[in-house]
Length: 425
Ligand code: AMP
Image: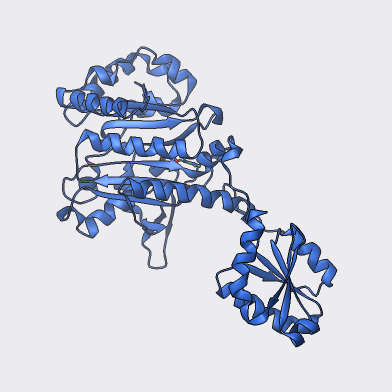
């Protein structure tokens, strides 16, 4: 039986990876320009890290983790997100006693046992940033500006930024109580998940995607009405910094995070053209996270961007894509007995920093010419008895059909000039 990729996973084939590289370059370069440096953490961690760092009551931890025992019976989990690993690394390497804030970016595969559908996979990729060590609302604004800058550079013309404040350990418990009192009498109208969780984690009911829940809680008390003066001020500063930097946003009372370590700012970016899975990225402030993971009380803020969804959105704007890279030079072997010399020539050209390829399938010179044309080689070089004897090569420009006779000794010096001519034509 044919073996296929596991459900919820997929291959990024070479013709698509050009697009991925284009996007990754923009993501990394923009984060770099904002002062963020790359961190690479392991793909798997101790399960406990995510239980603490993502929260045991979250859907991710309670339903979606790829958890297994390794051969020494340790519980290991394939990372479902990047923030917990960054917090662990921040603590483990003692960054809290160095220069703050520490600003990191990461990108790579994440794993969630989610129900696959368009824009939702079991192995997907996230790009994210984390800034630890400052509670300044201008840092929240910086992280949001960075996200919006990236979205713009990728060619998304109408992203929608939703923001809210989820308060802090001072004001949120009061809101929580208010919400439980509101939900209690209407609980039978909620979905079965929410009927179970409303008393433990009532904020998740607001977040529920179920239409009947949304209809039932239409008049729910608003978090923004319960914020303490500090949180109100923090939120105002974030909003005015965004406006001052030309970032439009929508205040969204339904944007909440159920977990205790989330504080103040929460945000999400939607791209309306993407359909049901329209959220491309989200994040917020998590002042309680580092402590929750066993470190000191250090604040943090960050976001994660779904790279598959981002590419789908960038796909709506094909004009932004780069063309696939052609090969610079293809070596045509006039007879198969010259394959040895063909390989040496190919190696020599590659060592000069020019992309080169040759025939490995014993094709006739004519068929090699067709092949070179198909892979969009810009130049071909013929190598046969005459060339080897006389010490020169015939270089043919595939676009203009111009031919150049080039001395073997000076070939690699001359190729860049010939390639340049090809570009000018
Ligand atoms: P989260 O870590 O859940 O806040 O997700 C951040 C972003 O990652 C989302 O806005 C999505 O773009 C993306 N994302 C989350 N889960 C998946 C998934 N299963 N498949 C593809 N993208 C996802």
